[in-house]
Amino acid sequence: MNTKNSKMLFNRALRVMVGGVNSPVRAFKGVGGTPLFIERGKGSRIWDADGNKFTDFTCSWGAILLGHSHPEVIRASRNAINNGSSFGAPTLAELQLAEVISERVKTAEMVRLVNSGTEAAMTAIRLSRGYTNKKIIVKFEGNYHGHSDIVLSKAGSGLATLGMPSSAGVTEGCVSDTVTLKYNDVEAFESFIDENGSRVAAVIVEPIAGNMGVIPADTAFLSSLRKKCDQSSCVLIFDEVITGFRVSREGAQGLYGIYPDLSVFGKVIGGGFPIGAVAGRSDIMKHLAPEGPVYQAGTLAGNPVAAAAGLTVLSHLDNGFYKKLEEYGKNIENLIKSAARNNKIEITVNRVGSMFSPFFTASAIKNFNDVLNTKKELYPRFFWSLIKNGIYAPPSPYESYFFTSSHSELDAERFGHAINNAFEDLKNE
Ligand SMILES: Cc1ncc(COP(=O)(O)O)c(C=O)c1O
View: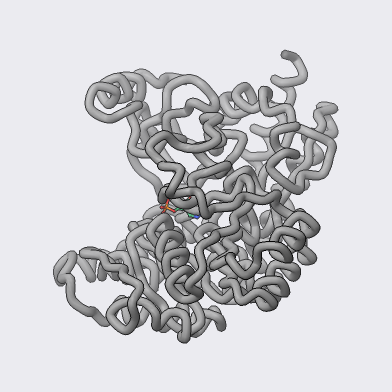
């Protein structure tokens, strides 16, 4: 495969962009080699700077749900931009987006739009502290809530990829009220809350973790979070930046039937443009400025182009849409399992709808420790084999695979073929 142009661009990028990228995982440190510069995308396909064509199973880390360059999303964002790209004043598009989120997600009584998932999670945490007048934030190992100081310890995603337990530049003071517990461990959580609940402002969780590969929370675990937060007057925050509108019309909360006080959204609701949202109980949300004492603001917040694109995506998401994604996902899961069986490779596939992860192990994967115990060292070879066979997979064993409604039967066939070749490569290693 010719990657001459990507290599040239990456070398050029290294001179002016730290690590050659604007977000760490893109640097391919998790798989080695040179990152591919992507030139364009259409539907399920992307093309790199050397003209290599791939079926995309990363989908902008889950932000793309209808496929790249969807004609209606392009039309809506073009129409919006023709009227101006930003005003820093209220617009109809942001109101409509807030209304749609609120209609779909019953806990989203009120919505505040921001510019990224990071900002949304940070705001939800500050709001919880302002609302409860308590300090401690409970989070879970391997969950990622963006890169704000408060949640940068034992997080998944790029930190896990780079093997960093935390980040330099985060003071002890910043994280002294952050407690990280084991994901899916009811006992550890309940005993912590029983002792410390009166000091806990919020419990923040990815209801389906997507930043250590896909790991769904057990229903019993989420139920315990709900019950204990109620008993101790802690705010329960679901970080649905990945799962919101991807796994059901009402996100992971709709799928599980367990409901948070606040939700954090991003990715899908911007149709590929920068966006984030905090949404939840109006008595809590009303503590945000200008109605309440918790400050939060944004020059580009509720941007009309992002809102128009997001609204268009959401307009496609009926129940039939998710049914199709589920059927497609089942097929993809079976393809992985049968290719693994044929090549005698031990694989566990975790999947919810259109997000999934193959783990190199025969054991069940329930938490970050389980992920660390898989044969992650096989991933780089597996990844490059997929790339050579025309599949663009996430360049880290700690990230999720995604697909869109534009992925076709032919794409599934290509995927099946590529995955079989990748396992064969591993077997012959
Ligand atoms: C669950 C979750 N929360 C928060 C974030 C941060 O969002 P952003 O990258 O838009 O700041 C991410 C990003 O991947 C995420 O997966």
